[in-house]
Image 1 (cartoon, rainbow, N blue to C red):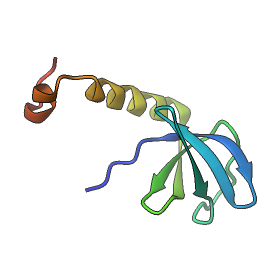
Image 2: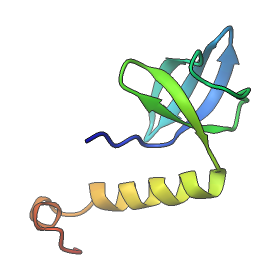
Image 3: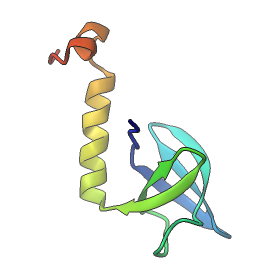
Length: 84
């Protein structure tokens, strides 16, 4: 199973983009995208560093907030699926 966190596009250039997610920046390929990507878009990135889908900003921010909440729960709560 794979979980992709929406990443914010902060730079776009020749079939590549720089994205940011949880403070981490990475260069990704845009070759799999079927629509243009612009700075400010959110994209999902698959293993290997290829952006493959654009995500609406509201949905991206909602997903990131849920992921951040999971990351800040105590280890035992994450293991057993309990709220902190």
